Length: 137
Image (cartoon, rainbow, N blue to C red; front, side, top):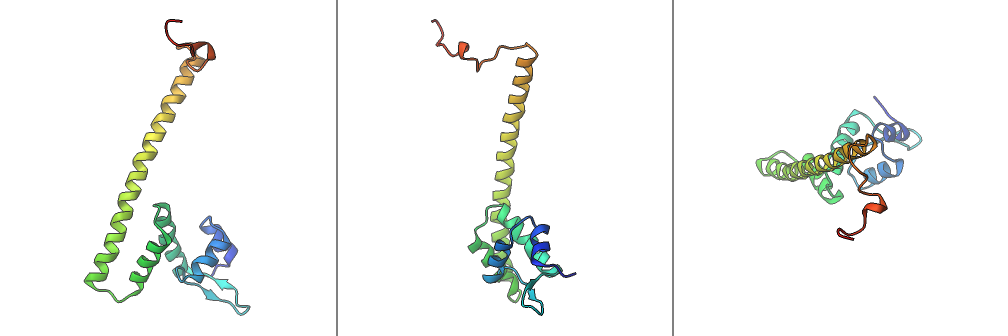
């Protein structure tokens, strides 16, 4: 299947500018149509999927370029180990982000419950300015 720049950007929730940048630096393969416009195919989509996930982990463009470069080289044990190390680092980052997201969600869940309790009259509103006075005054 062939995709225009606009279609491809929509598929990956990114901008056409980002796609141009990725293709210009050799990160994302694409073809050209008879009017010299970039066109993308399923191979491009596979690469973009990988790039997108690596970006979501916080991977730098430099590290993504290195990973993509390694993927395009002849396969060897050294190459495989280098790619593995990059992915392993990103796996660790993604798991850290999951734990941070869980802590944030728990905090928000607790706050929602607290406000529900206030609204139900079960506890006082501790954010009410009348409750801000230091104890004993």
